[in-house]
Amino acid sequence: MYALARSLLFRLDAETAHGVALRALDAATRLGLASRLAGERVADPVELMGLRFPNRVGLAAGLDKNADHLDALGALGFGFVEVGTVTPRPQPGNPRPRLFRLPEVGAIINRMGFNNAGVDHLVERVKASRYDGVIGINIGKNLTTPVERAVDDYLLCLEKVHAHAHYVTVNISSPNTPGLRELQFGEHLDALLGKLREAGSRLDRESGRRVPLAVKIAPDMSAEEVALVARSIAANGIDAVIATNTTVSRDAVAGLPHAEEAGGLSGRPVFAASNAVVRELRRHLSELPIIGVGGVDSGEAAVAKREAGADLVQLYSGFIYRGPALVAECARGLKALPGREPREAPTPPPATSRNEESP
Image (cartoon, rainbow, N blue to C red; front, top):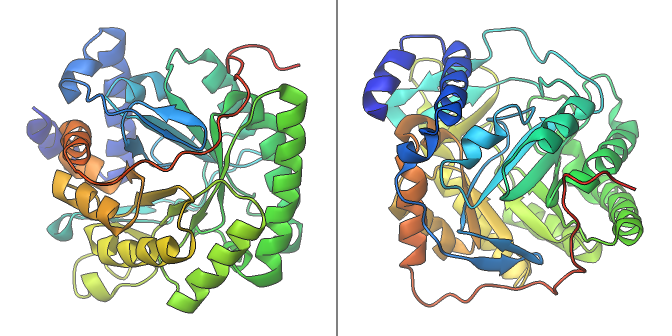
């Protein structure tokens, strides 16, 4: 069924097709049909970051930037759904066209530029959702905020989403916001993570519930750079790392249509680079949860990501190309993988409902 739908959707430009597909999924959810698209939900519970994930397969941020489709996406069998990236103020992102398919290699190039309706809109959509699974909220900075003031945007978003997220991801690795990747290194990273950890701990105490902080990093790093990032993550008490975001490299797609479009490349061509970062992170962060993302388009790819050192995996481009059936395929593959014990974080205080009014 999805192959037919995809053939029709791929006749539209990529961003239009994205919107049409999500609206169709919303309609299917209202009719009670969405869960049938993905088949039987795979139960493979694991405890990480003090959270219980129903299975190890999640949806990566970027597909539902505003949490407008949370119920529909949550019905497809994911163990967790990450929404965003969201910024303090609404912003339109970069001019269209800004999303391109490279079907020959199962890839996508995007230069969306954190287009979103702002953090207040996202919070209201999460509060209105009936999805009862694990929700991650991915936060970023506005384009017009100088890099040296970026921490203000992250702190504002953290304050607003804390009561409604199960975990919060700090996105410092999108290539589509000028200067953002500078925050991944050295004093910039330590200062940002230190202030966010301090604010997160205060919010945890005030609310009586612990909301883990994750950091999402880029694949375009040397082993030495990954080691420095890992050191900063550990020193600042960050709870997890997501590896990786899109790549600016075009080596794997040279000569293909759209290959020279500006933006971040995702999908199968980033698989090896993402796995290399995951392996290097695992060398330095033996117990910290790692969420692996980048090029997972089959159950075998999900297993390879886990064997590289990831505890959980996320889908994005593979989900666009393969459809809802990929969720269960990956979850079954990971469930069948023997020999790796889950890395558990200390159990936090009981969490209040995300739909309750915050104090």
